[in-house]
Length: 235
Ligand code: FPP
Image (cartoon, rainbow, N blue to C red):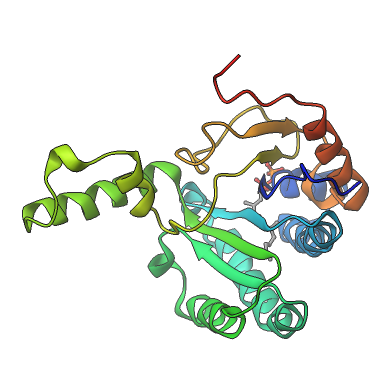
């Protein structure tokens, strides 16, 4: 199913771990663990589809309001995942990146993340971007602060601020806009994800809960994308 029009950048709102666990009478933590297996499946599917960028919403700015125990279990899972998977990412030529207010993450997580990013920085295959402690509005606030500081220092004039300058001030300016945004678990909302970058992304919302979203479901979402006719505001 690889085609010249394969989406270059796919972004995913991984939702439904809690419901998946509840349906099975398991603690929410187990849903997140099963969700981590779907992360692995998503990466493998991107290899097959020759996707260049995969951005995963792994922990939102709003997720900091969850119960302390759930935040802790997610952070431990993330740290373990990064520590265990970094050698595999190196071997499979994946370049790891992260966006968000990363300084809010626990130190051990920051270290594991830094190590993964450093070890994979010269890789040339899939770029895997983890959105962590990430909020689209918070990113815009951080962009505004960066530009305001530059204006105060006299490095830019307010009238010079345009789309290009905003793009250049994002957490990772190099990332192309997502072609396809997938949300699992059937919810019809954006939940503060990549608000600037998804202006013209195609959206596919599937009822499948994230832990059940594996290769077949991923390929179905991409098939749906192939059926779309992208016009970017033109006729
Ligand atoms: C949303 O499900 C999911 C999250 C808040 C966390 C996403 C984390 C993972 C998929 C696992 C770890 C990630 C990596 C990169 C190793 P939810 O808890 O909101 O589900 P619910 O809406 O059914 O309650």
